[in-house]
Length: 217
Image (cartoon, rainbow, N blue to C red; front, side, top):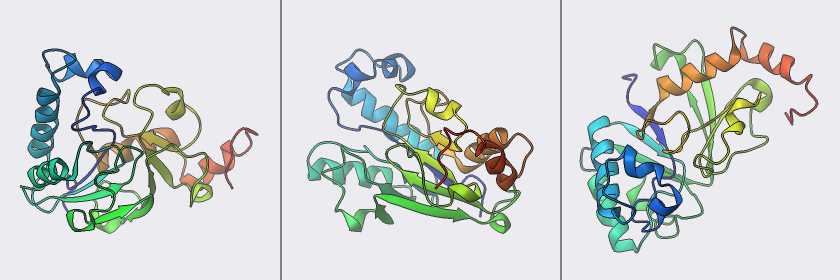
């Protein structure tokens, strides 16, 4: 597999007319006119998506993807899939119109476990296990082995979560690491290695479990 064919994102809020009031940082970042420019907002996201992805790419969307009615959602999804990419949805609290559209997604889950194999990605030092959820988790499958939780939901309102010892990462479009684009698997793995700080996953987990605030089970 090409190293650039796995992507992650959360909290796109396409079609959410009030998102620019809640996340006004998007106005400047997306070169929008004002807080009412939801058309420009949605166009930015679609164009960004299509410029980064290609046929065969897998994009994992960790919730709050599209708001509005099903007709609008189908239109947007067809635009996003027009280059042949494949979309996996992890359901968020604003995905009522799309959470049952099984024919439009490769997979739909509330929480999803994925293992990326070392022999398929040249930048991986070992198999890389991730647990995908809309909400940040305190504990998750494989945490005691060094698996990583990727999440969204909190936008830029909980910057401290990623700074804790937990192996987690906010892939939301408004997160502090975001450049208002999709995150590649390689970028996520680089952050994971930075957190490990030279240790292997089991060494890291063994070290941080000595902190009584760390919940591993």
